[in-house]
Length: 317
Image (tube, rainbow, N blue to C red):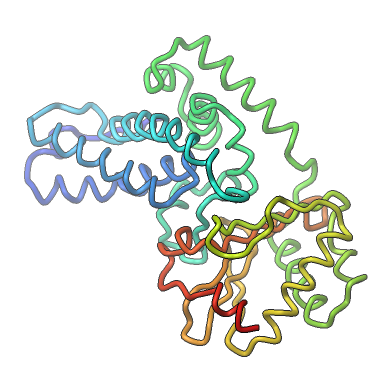
């Protein structure tokens, strides 16, 4: 798959080299973010990968393909980072969710691969159940279109081993994914109906939009009140979300704006000074809402802009 590059042009002049590195950044971030589910961790990996590429070019190393070089370095760094991140996530307070990104803009770096499905919070959570190597192989092959021989060189395993990792990872993911997808227009319409029902206190209407096994997950990281563990079931999720949305609707300091979160319909809640309070993403498939994921941990929202004090607002209510 690796794109062809001209190795000579990469090191002819400093400005050309800097331009090349900036061109490589989106691909590096797209891989790192999908591997780690964390913007901050992904940015650290990207910075390190580009620094290594810069050093190689500066030393006159002839890179047959700078794109392949950066993809390889990014993947290896992300695998190592994911191993250490796993230990931190085991000590995480409450449910862990990926750091959300707002994907309304056309220049978002995570979307340059044009693979929105692999960007969704639902898929990123699912990928957490894979080993770092399985995650890397699956993403490189199914999302970034690398061949197995190339992937074998990237992850340092035999081609047969890489194929086995891909088969196991794909089987694991497909067993847990919905059978029938829904169009973007249908997904957006369902979420609009969800908020309309919540605003009118229509519990029955809310339940009708939810799948029987719908799951509600909140990530406060121990810093903002959130669900201690995920809730499952149409009735429990409908009642809980209705209570929370009623609270926000009655608070003049809090307003909501519909946005696209990781390629899925979602919403952000902000305070009176337009500081971010929470990000909600909806997993819609098979004609119903299958998952609602709310991130209120301020550490996971800081990359999106100024963050408000949600805890104080809740206390005041």
